Length: 426
Image (cartoon, rainbow, N blue to C red):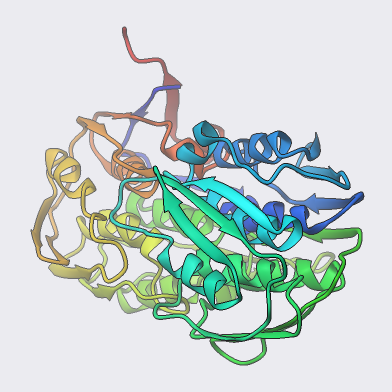
């Protein structure tokens, strides 16, 4: 599955169901470490490489993990290891999410500095600064974080940037801290509320009602819980853009409208039309995107939620390569998120990078080419371009895409695409 070969130029039509959100599943999975001799059941978990990496990490720490379809069960022993193995942590940045719960539960943690996609500097300084404010002693030695705290103490913490990972780590650390922890300027992404809901199910008092402010009252113990992962807003938006780029009609099922409003607003501004449906039996919402001849040019700036998500920026840029004018896409979160631009230009796009802004001049058509995915969302953008392009496109380095998109080949074929994985020649 090293590459995906796509024969483009065909309008996609049909229905596709949104997977569980990767970025919601990973912190909730890490939160199971707060349990002692107890069990957590998590539903709607996507089958992805990052999920498998987190499972492997938890298992090395002593957790027994079972899977039945999209349901995971976590049996957590009375004692777990507090030292995370380097190979697994290097594979995925979200591995850093075990730091907070391990420190809260074990009083110590050793964690290699994590890896992940190469989209710019993403230090965990904010995570560590917050833990130090709660009374932890933290040192970085030879590329490893060494943290210790006999008893974390609740206090007021102000994040210099609304980091999602730092917010999640501090929420889990605060679950066992003495007293109340107030974290201000927190991330407001839907994944944060998913974690808060899980902690509440464990018996932890968490108040997220104030925008950008979270209050957690420390508890000495957690209890068994059952929770569900929210739908993946980035995957849902990616398939809506597949409909836009191919001139097709796609219905994306199981969406939370508030989570994807930033994209819907931009699509409406660009002249695309869509409708919202609701399943009478389940109450689940769906969005149907209708064919549009050509998008109007847009000005897009990525921002923390509820702004336009950085994880959707490459896919939106791909769609704007076929717009009727000049669009500006400004990236305010990650420095190296425009690595896909050169690859799209190989397919006939006209993208020029000026500092933190991509200037995209719409072209009449894209042409198939052999391109390389430099990271997860860049790979998604190249797949979208391949679906819209004439002739055949080969997207290499698909291992990046498989970190975030479940059964992407099968889902595309169900919509009428000619797309299949293949192994690269040795």
